[in-house]
Length: 190
Image 1 (tube, rainbow, N blue to C red):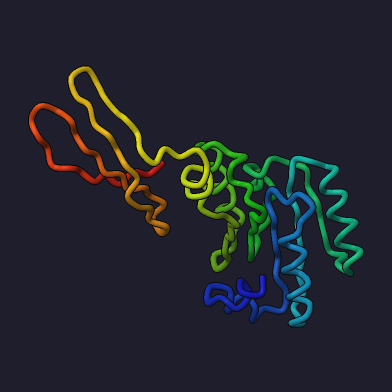
Image 2 (image 1 turned 120 degrees about the vertical axis):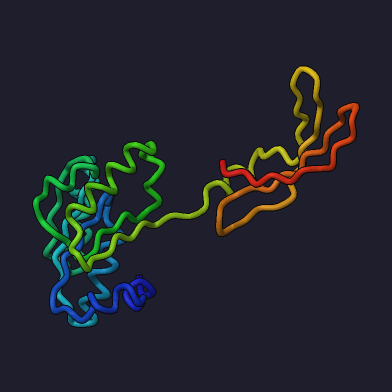
């Protein structure tokens, strides 16, 4: 969170006297409490709203926040995709804790649209994420060599690289058809 508050995108925000923070899929709110603590050290007040489906997690969040000296926490048990119903605007919206797998692509797009409705014009939406393709596909059960065929063609494909920036796999396909074909490298996004 230290790095977030010194990022060029947040520099304008940290010049304010008070920031409104919304955390969606908050659970017990580690992200927003961490930001609130750092802001208080910088003498910036914060107002926080935590949204999660689980009321038990929200109760723990409020208790934990108070133990750390943060009293201005409001919790709302609701679907994160419905935050537009809060009818408020926020300087920072957080989705901290690798929560995107809880949403299918359509739900995630709906969530992003809902967040856009409550985000201040100069606000930022911060999503905590990492490359799951690399850790799930490549490091576990990934087929480094794979026999592929259809009715009259047979080839082998081999893993030949991974692009961390794009999240794409490179596979080279070698054909064993009657007519020799030069190996082909294909970039795939899974």
